[in-house]
Each structure stands twice: as structure tokens, then as C-alpha cells.
Length: 195
Figure 1: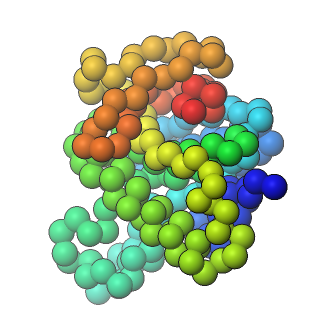
Figure 2: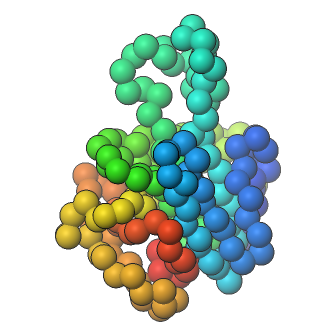
């Protein structure tokens, strides 16, 4: 029997970090920008779990980061985080989608996505070592993909398709060893487009 990695991760990731997922839809909302950014992702035959580590530390400069309390908060860049992480599984294929929503200035998004991949590798390695149900993850096809939702497109190298067809695959480009696509926010997408 194939392990359901999204379900297992939902059991070990703190509930305060979980994002709501209903049976066939996931709405990602970025509230930290001047304008409210959102993306809807619909799915049918996928197991999906979503969480966010993009939590601010207290306004007190001496306070520890909520997610990475072991890092020195004054060390430039070590607290870099992306907006959302989605784990989706269909049969034996598991995709970890590293999501960033940007309204205007996309600078640094790639560093945030690479940082998120390193974080997820740590989480999955730790789970594999310590949790017997995660041992079967080695039998699955695991892939990491970055998605930047922004407006307007940063580069015309990325797919600018606005098709809402379930069957229209989105183009991913290798960006320093990570497959990345840029899409517009305030749209509806289907999980099958990203898989």
C-alpha cells in the first residue's frame, strides 16, 4: 500500500502552520502586501496538504524567529521564507510545490524558493529517520517545483498562458537546479497543470 505523504505530513506539522484545504479547492491568500493577493487551485484525484512557515517574529528585535529560533535574526538572509508549501500526491508521484506570491518586487523570490526546498528536504529526511510510516517515501517519485505568482510577468521566458483548462500544462524552467514557473495571481488553476 502506498503511503499518503500529504496526510502523514499534516500529522507531524504543527496545526498552527496548516492552511485550510477543502475537498477540491485550495485558496492561497497573501495578506502581508498592500493589495490582497490570492490564487485558487482546484484538484480532484489528489491528496493535498498545504502549510505556511511565513510567520513574522515579534516586533521585539531581540525575539527569536518563530520557525527558525536557532538562527541569529541579525544574520542577513538566514530567515528567508517562502509563502506556502503544498504537498500533492497522485498514486506514487509526490510533488512539493514551493509557492511565492509577489505583487510588485520579485527580487529574492528564487532564494526564497531554494530555501524552502532545503527546509522541506530537512523535514522529509527527519521524518524518514524518526517516523516509521515515512520509510516508504523512498518508493515514491518525489519532485520539487517552484511557483511564482505575480503580476505582471517578470520575464517573457515564462509561460504567460491564462488558460484555465485542466489539460493545459504549465511550462517550468530550470532555475539553478529547481524547476520554476511564473503565473499570474488572481486566477484559478488546476493541480493537474502543475503536476
